[in-house]
Length: 134
Image 1 (cartoon, rainbow, N blue to C red):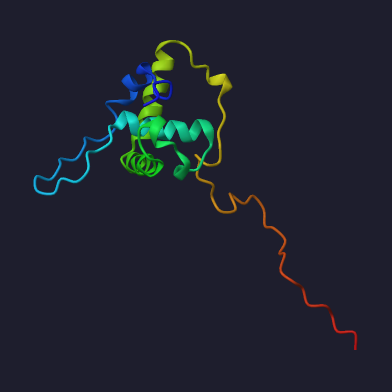
Image 2 (image 1 turned 90 degrees about the horizontal axis):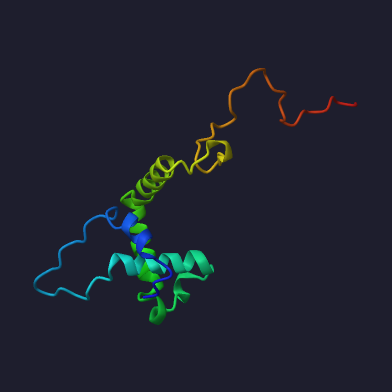
């Protein structure tokens, strides 16, 4: 695994957040599970390079892109990313490194009501029949 993708200080913050690994079956255990740090390295590789999941180099990253994608999906469903975001914001606030003057709100994070609140009636945009000219 490339250590530059997931440095030790980043892994210390992320390690407690993923859900526990499922137990292996005794009878037909299948393949060994890829460690979470290696899967995170695969996700970071895709984020840094912009390659497709299928193009992740297994030899240098340590896992296939499909494995990294599945782990990303599982962690997203388990709510890992909001917990990591909250932990990093808390750490920045404690260190006095977070300035709320430089924040922004994106529509992908805030629910937009359909049409918003209407202050006055709006003109109809429906087609209007023309008066007969006969």
